[in-house]
Length: 162
Image (cartoon, rainbow, N blue to C red):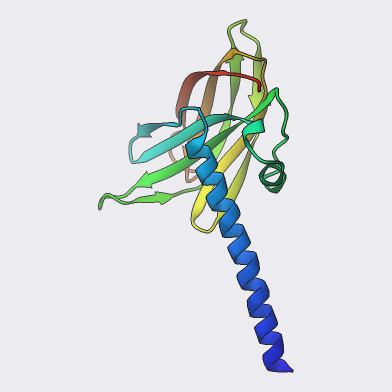
């Protein structure tokens, strides 16, 4: 009986782990396949990667898993912070993020970020509303590893409804 319990628990763990891995890979592949531009900025020994994505690019199942509201007028930021190591490798690090968006009419809105950690990967998701064909300027303050200076990350993009 004890051996059977180990086998069942092992299968359950393996199944859950594989499902989580599949979702993680699907999410990463989605972000690399969408017709939006992912970008990055370097600051001292850190690189901040960021992208704005229309929420309808996500399947309902993936959106639900990451608590992202799907709507034609809803998008999200995905931000990751990496420490650039002396040997050329990078290490994902936690960060404190705050910021928001501004449109051409100078209407502003703050964006709250949620940390997502999957294995060694760490990234932040922040959701916001937008209008079709709206040009949006994002300003996000990023403080890597909750110490030292906060870096100001700014970029502009145009978002479209489906």
